[in-house]
Amino acid sequence: MPLTEQQAFAAMFRFLSDYWERNGRPDEIGNLLGSLNPDLTRDSGPADPAMWSDWLTAVRAVQDVPSV
Image (cartoon, rainbow, N blue to C red; front, side):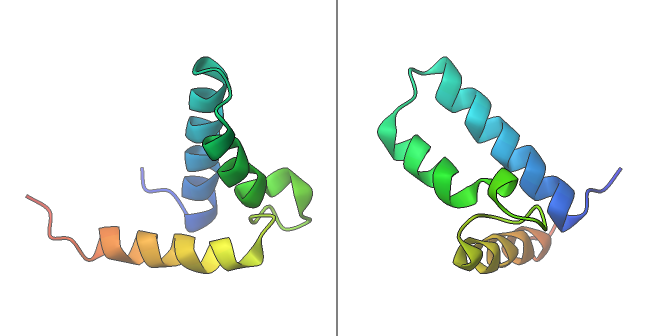
């Protein structure tokens, strides 16, 4: 089942957050999570609005890759 951009973003945030917890909360990932944190906004987007544009660019890049 395909995910929406918002659902994929939430899954990526969850994945990174779980990794951060399991690996001793490294600062580099913590800083990234702070910028991405959807709990800090009303629309469930990233705390740093510029990150949404970066996210959509990444989504489009993956969608443009031919499947094998």
